Length: 99
Image (cartoon, rainbow, N blue to C red; front, side, top):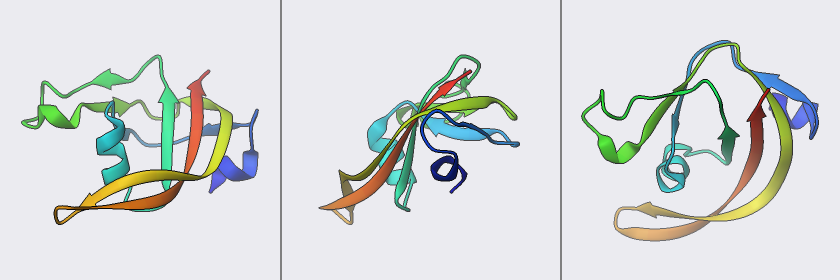
């Protein structure tokens, strides 16, 4: 992962728009993998009122925006619901701030 390579204090950018959620619950379910990005953004646009799923609290991040890597947290425990059961899963959480 590019963020982990750059490390805290480094800068990361995504060339395409990013679909995000303001809900940590939705984010933990959306990221079926082991990574969650927590982003402080200035230019992202809330689009939950456009789609039919308001509970997703969807936000779109603009392309080519630069983010400073504030911290990388490994083995953060998240409760993930799957078929009416909750499982605890360790994820890497990266804190980013738009520059």
